[in-house]
Image 1 (cartoon, one colour):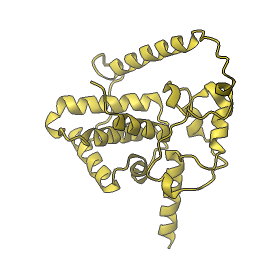
Image 2: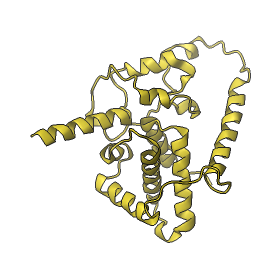
Image 3: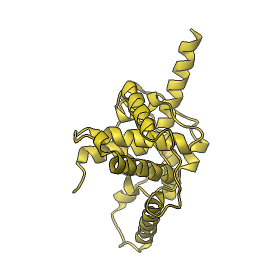
Image 4: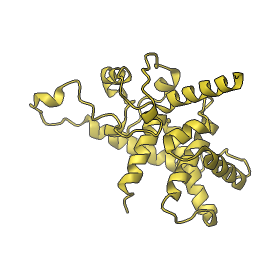
Length: 225
């Protein structure tokens, strides 16, 4: 059974904004699988439940693995879920886990299964990309200004942001390069020139790193007042 287009669109939006590394995504999926398997009574059949479960799973995975993680207000901007609700859902999940987020990566029936599945997909994807494609004589398709590689989905924050970001080559951007999200992967290293050009555009959607930076500076400004 395929997920609805609206959910796939939301997932593309969140992953494009956060640029989470594959390890964080896989750990988050493991948390989500464990939640559904061991605490099914806490999972409702509501249509919007999957958005909240995946959002909080990504938050937990990011906070456990990443030293420089995002604040929940920034996650709220990207996921369109209220900060108060994210805080409550995160606390409830942590209580279910007894605040124990560590998992054994070598457990064959746990995280290792996700890692193996990812590696298998990655190999198949690389092999598919390496195949020689037919010669395309359409000159317009090779024009460097094509933008179908980038996620067209705005975040709730983007409508209020017209900032120009000129200095965005951070360690976070470089460490997340190379994830095989095919055509919707804006941080793929297969076209570095286009990637750099993407960051220089005036009208583009901000990443979670940028949103987080704005929120942190706003919080510091309020604290000084």
